[in-house]
Length: 345
Length: 292
Ligand code: FES
Ligand SMILES: [Fe+2]
Ligand SMILES: [Fe+2]
Image (spheres, chains in turn orange, blue):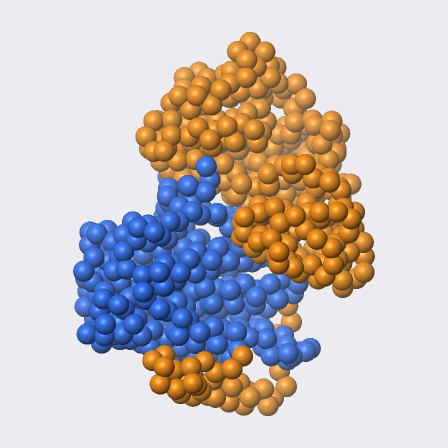
């Protein structure tokens, strides 16, 4: 890059920039006369080994796990909305919301619904027995609970897990709150016995039908903080119907499900490896397993962090921030129009 | 458990999508005070190029990180900074539409970040050393973005002066995310290098650069402003008045924060409040608009 012009059009090369650049490069050159010494990077392992203390059936198809340190040591504190990252014996990694009592530092509790058609993580959790030791990372919080005067909590099925500690915290804060808890049948809803009788509406599809967004948002008066956790169609319905003067809070953790995706192949330039991207997964998801240091952030196609150069093939540029016609793509959302893509990775 | 939740801990940093509409925002968005308006506007000219540079440098650092939590934080940081850069860039387009040509100054800022602080085509240890050096500069700059973020969240004088709400929301959304991720650059530097003299040198270079960029940038904006037309000469000396009025930070406040940075036991977590930042982000109109 050449020296830019003067700010007021007096010269074609700005004198201040010339001077600053010369000074900075001079200092840099002086310092690099000596060969650089680099302090070693010390690996940091923050994971814990926790033992499964109890596996309890808490509803149809739902078990809760109680985890504790093998030596009974106190565990790191957490706040409502936090989750743990479990390394399952098969090597799968899954994140589960903490749904116990934050003031109990002796144990953590998570709850998992059995999803026969999922990625296999929930089946594996259901098969864990007491005494199993798991590698665990966290707790970390992607769904922080913020003190407000009035809350509406909406939980769909197993979505109760992050909401339950929030409900209890709202009660302790003396806030005005209301919980709507929905699911297929009463028997599939965990933790009903832990909820107060007041301020809670249970609504199940078998007796009351699928709830409408009007029903869910009836008490979203101005200033209400609406916290939602549930299946994405429920969240989408609430997003569309939320009154302007309420605020919405949900875990933006999982990227939106892929709509009409077709399988395709990705070739990585650096290694020449060819990866198969199934219809239900993003290119980023698959590439990340092969290259754990690939850069990404939002996984929803708006931040631009995962933008990658396409060396051959064509992408469908699915996100508004992924302009068509350039030779780049956002690998978190965009897909090949057909066949194979070669990426500069 | 007490009734208070306390300072949130262990947050997963995530980029937030935002929606802004600049079309109705006046050029002097602090009404009747172009001097204060442009003191803050210098930021809009520095941030797009500066934060894109953060993103490039940090992406280069990701493979070197040997700490899972820190790597996650750095990725979240990158996403947030990328959103900041593009959001401020849109403000520059709006300035252009109103007849304030910011391009000459922006070109110089781009030269600084893309050429002087860019890739030097190095390899091996020299490449690592240059990377560490740039991370030390980012850590020093991030000290200021955190301090400024904390300031803007509490700058009630701007509301009282009738400052444009859309512009305040941009600055406060950005400021709140700066507070939210204020520890990341420092921790990355401490993880990959951590030498105290390098931190001091980076701070000295950063202060020198920021003072001259503000001086030149403000002068430029006051001269190029189609309404002011150079009738008031710009320069950082104006913050004596604007700082007292609460429309910009005060010199004394910034100086005190630099002294804290130079302590060996400096921790960015002691600057600003995560709880306040999250409370703002939960209600920021631009962030809420994108969630719907
Ligand atoms: S990760 Fe944000 S756009 Fe892909
Ligand atoms: Fe930023
Ligand atoms: Fe930042």
